[in-house]
Image (cartoon, rainbow, N blue to C red; front, side):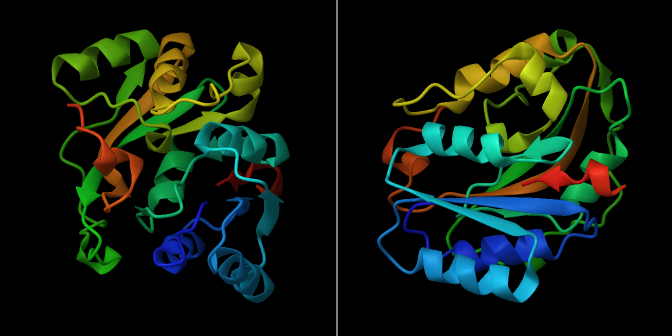
Length: 224
């Protein structure tokens, strides 16, 4: 996170209010100069489940890499600190993992700064069954119908799979998701894609997305 005090409480509420509760939060404070760190401390003291890592400002890629290095969970999800996740995101993601699945991907919606999570109809039954299979094949299927997006926040990855392929985010670049998510898809021997809007991407003034033209059990907890 970096200077997101306006959005951080809503983000944390969406994580702490999950229907699946066997998770940890790795919160990386990337040199914030506003009240973001104070908010993190308040939530950690009140609710627990959170490790806070503070560093000098290094950018999004380095921050993600640091977060993963501290994660102890069997699976890793990414949540940007000005975004939200559906209350059922972790439950639905965890349901689709078995010993054969390297990665679970899911859909998202874009919202503006005024969006409230209560507006999202998250308990409706999905109309499309999940895609299951080789990551490259699913990538090709999603690309044909324009549903593939290079967004790290749309995938949850088995930690041993990350270690196996040896991938990290390239530091010092914008759109660090592009190569990272593509490699994960292409390297996944077996994955699941859920065509449900489980991630809420807030497009706000001043964010990277809006500053450029936007292109079309206890040992099994999740690190967020």
